[in-house]
Structures are given as C-alpha cells and as structure tokens.
Image 1 (tube, rainbow, N blue to C red):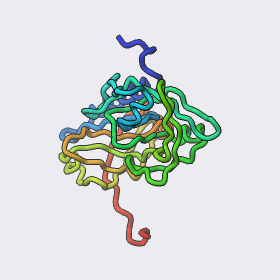
Image 2: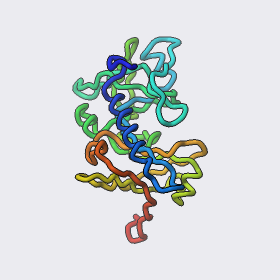
Image 3: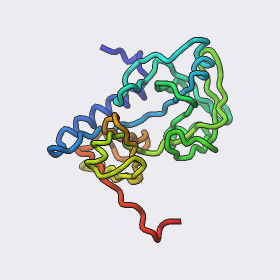
Amino acid sequence: MISNSTIDPATIEQIVRQIVLQQTGDGAPAGQPKLSVSISARHVHLSDEHVEILFGAGQTLTQMKPLYQDGFFAADQTVMIVGPRKRMLPSVRVLGPTRSYSQVELAFTDAISLGINAPVRHSGKIEGTPGCVLVGPQGVVELEQGVIRAARHVHMNQQDAAFFEVGNGDFMKLRVASSDCTMVFEDLLVRADETSKLEVHIDTDEGNACNLDAASKVEIFKQDPPCACQSH
C-alpha cells in the first residue's frame, strides 16, 4: 500500500485518471488498438548537469513510479519553479530519464499563476521560449528558455500508425464522449516510433474542460489536412 504522503497530489491525479481512461478503452471494437488518454500534470525535464546543481554533485534521478511509456518515470525528486515577481509553484515533479536540455511543461493556468507567457510548443521546441528559476535542495538553476505549454499529442508505434493511416508528424483529432460534456480536440500531433504504446497526452486544463473523469468513450481519428486556400 502506498501512503499519500509519498506522492504529491498532481501525480496521484495523473495516475488515477490514466487508469480510468484505460478502462474505458476496453470496449474498443475488435482489432482496434487499445487507447489510453492521460492527463500530463505540470512537470520538469532536466539535464544531467542541472540534476547535479539542484540535488548535489554525483546525484542522479531515482524512480518513484514508472509511467505508461516504457523507460519513462516520475522521479522521487521535485523542484520549486519561480517566475517573475517571485511567484512560485512548489514541489513540481521531475520526470526521467534525463535529457540533453531542461524543459518545464505547464498548463495555461499554471503559467498564469507564475506570471509567465508560456507558448504552446511541441516538446523540444524551446527556442525563443521564456525561462524561469528552478530551486532544488542543493542549488538553483536559472533557465534562459524552456518553459512551454506542451501541445497535445499522441504516442503510437508503427503498427498503430498503419491502422489509423497516419505517420509521424501528422495530426489527429481526439473525441472525448460523456453524457454532459462531449468534446473534440483538434491538432493532436502524432509521435510515432517503433516501440511506443498508444497514448494521448493532454494537460490538466484540457482534461478538466472535457470532464475526462466522466468520459464514457475516447477515440482518435485522422485529421484532414487544411485545404490550399487556408495555407499561408
């Protein structure tokens, strides 16, 4: 049994909501890949260098809870995020493994509370984004850039991509159906590789907007490309 004192509320929320949506996927038609929709709460990705600055020389991330995608995990470590005018979010979870760069992913309301004008970006596209200050138990890191609102996306392997007739970099739509709040999200970026499990990531604001907990069905389908008259 896991005590609530060992996991922060945002992580508990993420785990619970993921389980709920995995269960709703059990009724998918025969042959259709099982879809999981997960709420990605605010979190931080760190470089090895920044891990050592924040948590001490020689320190590495330690796993608290594995995530749905193999090889990824919620770490034991958390940091404080400090924005302009000393606004802050305490105890924001670090996700592993480490990356070659540090990145902070927030929901819109998180960014507002910090006073940061965080743009919607796909993960890794941090050029020209605002920065923030990260505070750990052993040190402080001032990021010049890297704060984003992560664009909604769907992970899948190549077999799933073939089933839905999409490729890496294409876009899909997510339909969340419920008795009181059916909603369709467009511009769901396809991130296809050889090993990923079929999983949609939306942020906490999007999850609350569609009342994800009450969803009776979730489905994704290919999004038609914009017509030539809409291109610029």
